Length: 354
Image (cartoon, rainbow, N blue to C red; front, side, top):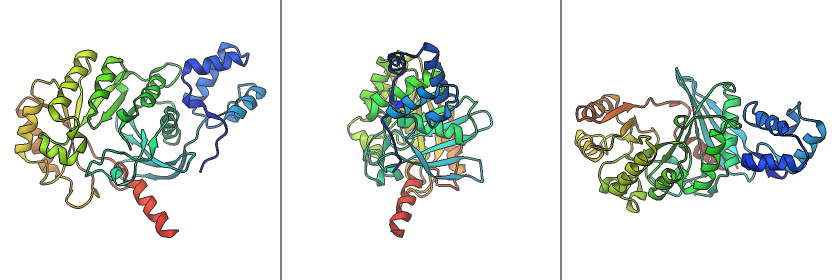
């Protein structure tokens, strides 16, 4: 377990942080310096903040800690440079986060919960028990650590809440983290640089729209019929497809931001041209975008990724029917970069050696 003293500074909203500094008798510029160290210089401890007076650093360290997530295992893909981190939290729980390098962008994929309660049958995270929600600070820790350890401190990044967990089941903490990402005093990211990926929590989608949260929306669809989606994504039994699509249209109408539908293709399960035709009918008139990817390897018995030839045929069938579609490049295939894979392998190894 990681040692921590006092409250987590990255859990504090900016207004609360400013008021805390004022209450300590500090001028406004000290608050700005503190934000710079936490979110631009990516400090891990107060003693690194060398332009703050030493008495202030000592006083802050007596009441707060800056970062509580410790990287306990990291892997770097020899294929594409993807970095996968396993973080240990202060209570011993483990979460995953990934940094993906592309030619023109860097994407950080972070967790929002320890485990996940949704039980999607092809997801490695679902095999581990859901334990708790992450705080906003624990999400921000992942982002800061990935930027620092990946050598992209000075670069703008895209952040995707798409790791372990269902973001919209941890709504308040996720939105608090997004507000810090949006803020010029935080990471200063635009709405188009932040994506919330949900398995289809309809009330949360509507709430994002009503609250005007500055974020893009991705929906993990994976099927075009309720029968198949009930099996793949059991949450569909609570929020079936027509209800989910209505919420997505509501999000687009309220925000002007077009949802993306994520579709992982598994051989012989959801990758046929008949399934492509059903997906076309489902998405017709939604002004939406389908993001296709071959499913992860190692998802369990009966789940094998579709071949690239079939993925391309599926994409072409959508496009011929007027549905905008792209193929998302798989990353980190040699380092267990799929959601939940590194954590479950690590826990199995450590249990076996205990």
